[in-house]
Image 1: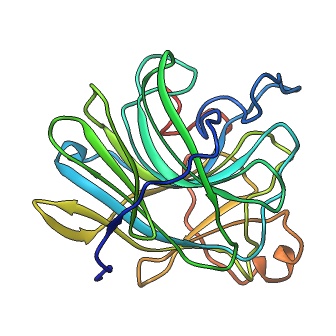
Image 2 (image 1 turned 135 degrees about the vertical axis):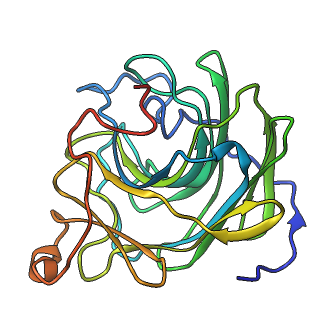
Length: 256
């Protein structure tokens, strides 16, 4: 897969937001009920220290359902979960996030701890239009974040990643993932860089709710949807899918 050459871009930051993997995204507000983190996607843990980059193209047409005070997001990431319970604060990720229904935006962030977190919100993106996202890292812990071949920013962390993956995330059980069985969210061209070369990414399917579906196409495209989305039930019985690790407490990005 060949991507166009990159152009460094000074992005006008629209302001910080709370992490897609952290707290809710409205500053100063306390959501009620508390945030519940749920995920659907792929995760890999083998030889992650050798992975120098991760990239994918994300496209969705059926919008998520977002509960005010919470968020839905889709992203690629490197992470190093640790400890027992809670949320991993060692993560580097880029993707789209929707906190204002109908207005998804770019986001990227890097964290070393809860007290050392850099979270940025970028330009609005359009559903139905492919979004190319990429992370590249070096051996010194510097991460470069790209969207549509433009450099969004870079950050440095002190940890070595132990997980690399792609996920859609919700923060409230009433929220719906983007996509239904007929028109799922598509994550194509999922590749990782090893030894300076881009190769297909291979990960394990993981979901945390029975209503979430993840399907792997023969060409490597990841199809993600929510059976509660309108129109999903009509074609759900015609779809075969692989699903593992069901349960509200299991996630590669929660510290286990």
